[in-house]
View: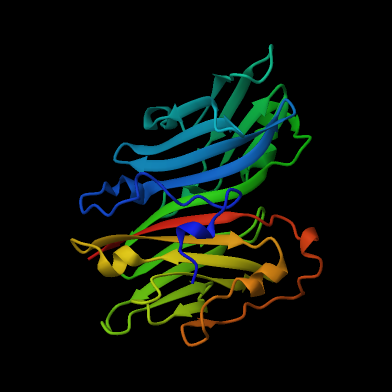
Length: 312
């Protein structure tokens, strides 16, 4: 089995997070209501990374937007606090650094007046969040696309933004549920992670997608870190897990990390299998087609990172 941190190279997914790197019994429950979505877009012909952070506290819903260049230099950042969300719609004009000598402004528009929320901080439907630069719709999130274009009078982006990563914190005792997609513009699925520690000598881990069990790890006390690849909608998705703190953490409160990484090629799927069939059971996911030319598969390289905190 490959060591969990070494599974990710320079072009892989970095799962280290200062807030999650240690198991502390008094860790803030604020993480339970924190979702970070990361997009790759273009501003003035230059690639950039836009992080959209949805959160929720006692005062209400919050939103943070940060724009970085590819060298991780922050171009701008804005926090939309609950007081601004009281109107459920609004806009802000942001100053950009190091983009061009003129027109260094980006406009942020949002409308959550009809938004529907689930248990988490991220809206499910009935909303839009739009970023416009020089009259071009750089990034548009949400299902109210027509309303967003009407409000902003923006033109469609010349290059399509890519949804490349999502990070989410989950809390629970034995079952952890969320909504998940495994490629840019992919189908949204119900993802369920279950840990069974009733049998002290043989704890196990199960992952279900839309109520179907797609992976089961036995002998978890020996296989607390690992990786395997499953099929979702005909695409290979490599699953990395690290549940050490679940099993050996202190104070009955442990964090685990799960990464769902769409594979770059079908060949990688078979090359990555490092555990024996006695350790992991893989159930095939229904697919209407085959892999074909993996280079033509859209959206490969998407990463879903889940920080899962166990409460006893």
